[in-house]
Image 1 (cartoon, rainbow, N blue to C red):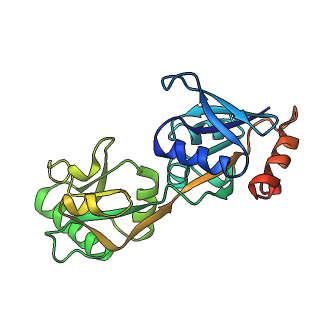
Image 2: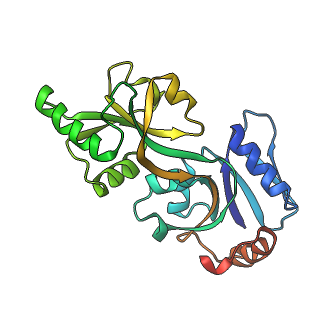
Image 3: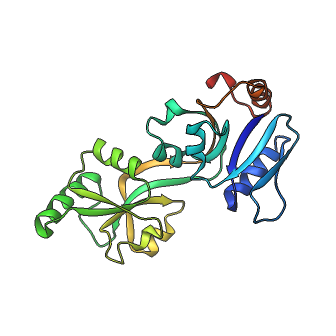
Length: 234
């Protein structure tokens, strides 16, 4: 049996169901909206597992599911050396969002990462501690800033409304997902001109550590023909 992990609620779940439905495979929740069991029609040997989008990278890496649909940002942030643990099969064309670095709009001289680096150094000299950048995406943000030579900062965890941390004085800048930038502008923040960290979208992944015996591999080969991916990518 081939186990497919899909987001358990919200627009990402609905769009995933629509994407598979357009290819002749019906995915649906079984029972009430409060239940997390699912049903599949139109694909033999496929079992639906409903999980939060953030859980799916972990379950793929652990080999507890064979396939999973989640944001490419989550896979890259939650899994070190992600491409050694999962294979990217199909970018699905929805769930688009950009992970960006944003600073207060009232910082007139900070428009690029080099400017942020200079501002961070000046901030530490003036205040005695490092400039705080609020984010949920610690690995992606840290690797990006290091690669671009930004130092003298500290990442602070934000699991709520990251855009509000600057206004609430718990951070001086942020790194967060945005689709249109409207929420950032509403909170008087601006995206750095070279501050794009990752362009995310919903993607179908396969686990490199799942058990591909017991009929899972033939089921994958059959699914590949219908969904348009190369099963040998795994």
